[in-house]
Structures are given as C-alpha cells and as structure tokens.
Length: 278
Ligand SMILES: NC(=O)c1ccc[n+]([C@@H]2O[C@H](COP(=O)([O-])OP(=O)(O)OC[C@H]3O[C@@H](n4cnc5c(N)ncnc54)[C@H](OP(=O)(O)O)[C@@H]3O)[C@@H](O)[C@H]2O)c1
Image 1 (cartoon, rainbow, N blue to C red):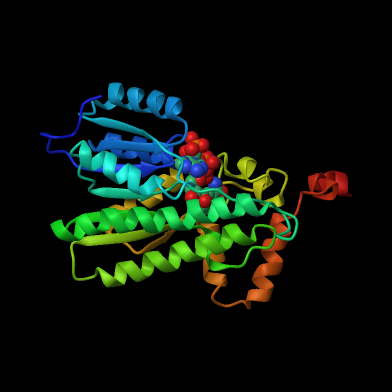
Image 2: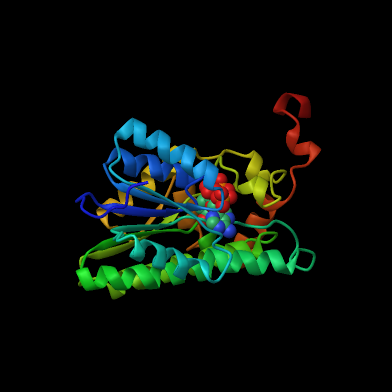
C-alpha cells in the first residue's frame, strides 16, 4: 500500500469502517476524493472495502489499520503508525462504538468497561492526539458518533446511553473552545438504525431493534453534510428530531420510562398485526 506523502488530497481517518455507518462514511469520503485511513479489528473486511473503493473511485492512497480500540494503547499506536508513515489527518471520524443490553446488575462488568474504553476513552484519546496537530495547522474537522440516547437515560442500555451523553457534551464543549479557529467538531445523533449494532449488543429482540430503522446510508449522509458545514450537532431523521426536541420538555423519569419500553423485548402481543388483535 502506498504511503500518503507527496499527494495533496485530504485524508480522513474513520474508526469502525468495516461495517454500518463507518462503511458508508468511507464511501462518501472516497467519492469526494479523500485519502482513506480505515480502522477496525476486522482487517480482511477493511481491505475488501478499501480495495473496492480504490477501484471504483481511483483513490490515490489507502491505509488499513487493524486495531482494537477497547485496548487503552490503541489510539497512541494508531497515531504513531500514521506519523511514521507521514500521514497527516485532516478529518477524524470517531465512529467505532458498541453497546450492551440488559439490567446493569446482571450484565458483565468486563464488557461494560470495554465499552467505556471504546466509546469514551478512545474518542478522547484520538481527539487529543489529532486535534493538537489540527490546532498547530489551524485546520481540521472532527465527527463524533453520539446518538438519540445522548439526550435521555436509557434503562437496559444504561452504560451505553451514558457514554453517548458524554460524547455529545464533549463534542459541543470542544466546538465552543475552537470557535475562533478553522476547526470544527460535530456530533452525529442517529436513532435506531439498520446496522449490526443491536445484534452485537444482544439487543436484537428489543422493540427498538424491531421498529422503524434508519438506513446507514441516510445517517452517514446527514453526518457528512453536517461535518462539512461545521455544525456542532445533527440529529438524523425527522422522528428522531422530534424525540430529541421532546427531551427538553419531558422530565427524565418520563424519558427513562419511554426508553425502557423501547429497550424491552418485543412481546407476542407486539408481533400481532392490527387485524389479528381484533
Ligand atoms: N445502529 C444504531 O442504531 C446506532 C444508533 C446511534 C448511534 N450509533 C453509533 O454509531 C456508531 C457505529 O455503529 P454501527 O451502528 O455502524 O454499528 P456496527 O454495524 O456494529 O459497526 C460498528 C463498527 O465499529 C467497529 N468496532 C466495534 N468494536 C471495535 C473495537 N473494539 N475496536 C475497533 N473497532 C471496533 C466495528 O468493526 P470490527 O468489528 O471490525 O472491529 C464496526 O466497523 C457507534 O458509535 C454506535 O454507538 C448506532
């Protein structure tokens, strides 16, 4: 694989590019002639995606980084590898993330600590490293994956929702800190979407996972547009916008009750069609 020295296209680093939103971001950036740095644990899937985008869009440069971002060392290793290859990151997309379904007193602590490392610590660490370089150049853009659950407590996904509340708060604080610089930080807040997320979170039987789902293409497009405009936050999808708006009006206890209903397993009663309920 070629290094990115000596070409003047911009470079985006996308974490979690092997599936879901990350894969769609990779397509959007490739289409706009960015060099790609794709990060995830599944190197084979990243290579397959990277090579097909290289063929389709005649990418100048592609860098595949296999890394597990639930390891605390991972962000520094990624940064060092790119420095060593002479790759400057113009856009950072902190997309990789995971959740876990269940009552907190029953779920596995180890998985939750990994989720906190992945969804919070790795985002903070990567942002710290790459933002300092962006500030030195007075140029750059960052997109962080928050969620509709950033706005509300989410029983049965308590740790996940709290990590996403962190991401939204962190992003909007940075956007303010950087307002006099040519650097923007954007939070993308999707609702339930058609990716591997629910399956991986052991939440595939919940009402949320079996209700209306946004398409990953649409969500990535909303995030991409907001990032390019330098907006501090975008909620993807009309119903999600309404839900985020309602979160300002309703007490947290009511929001928690609504989210609990969504996160409970779909019952036989839910599965009945309106006709069969008669
Ligand atoms: N889908 C939804 O309903 C939804 C809604 C709101 C927000 N989000 C957020 O959107 C982001 C993307 O999720 P998605 O829905 O696209 O889920 P997904 O289909 O499960 O994709 C997750 C991506 O993250 C990568 N990843 C997971 N754990 C990783 C680790 N330890 N180290 C490195 N990479 C890792 C995965 O690649 P490997 O397995 O190859 O490592 C994959 O590429 C997440 O931050 C999620 O919280 C999702």
